[in-house]
Length: 78
Image (cartoon, rainbow, N blue to C red):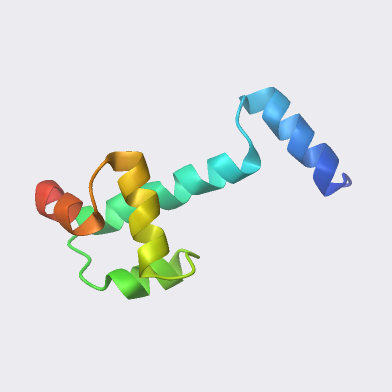
């Protein structure tokens, strides 16, 4: 892209109003919700696939964003 990571980060935030990290996390959480709605059962595998350090890391992120753990969301989305 011809820009330093710092410059890219500043421009992204200025244009979108969101940091790159926050945007990445929203994308990951959207993928989690999609997969849960499809009935994904392997939460540890899903966490690894989406770049979380482990299942508990993903669970904390999902609970923080949605207010419920992934298992409960899967049941509601099914």
